[in-house]
Length: 182
Image (cartoon, rainbow, N blue to C red):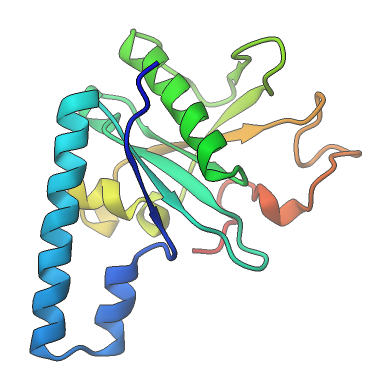
């Protein structure tokens, strides 16, 4: 399997946070140059591999998450996953990308089992893509009110999903669709 390159961010949208804080012209020029470099990197990665994975670090009680950029261009919603470390999230999203590129179309409510030891993944409609999929919306030049669509992949542990009794991790690690804090 070819691993698609990824970029890890410390915040969901560093550029927007800086912009909202009030920047001078030099800082704005730096941000524009950074965005241009990022846009080029994302485009080149998608051109070379078909998909880009954007990872965002978690903090305190906000889980890490990762999402794809490139599936929308193939006529499929992007994918987002919460609560996994960077490597596991990238491996999972790349596995799903290969299936989708091969012709699989995921549907909300579907449970996917990649391998015997792997967790199951529940495919769910993600209602807040504009609040989380900044790189995808920027790549496709989509506004918040016309965001790319996305599916959330919710993983289980020993047959238990995050809402089941006996699930071993805190609820905030895998928020239900629509409950994540951006």
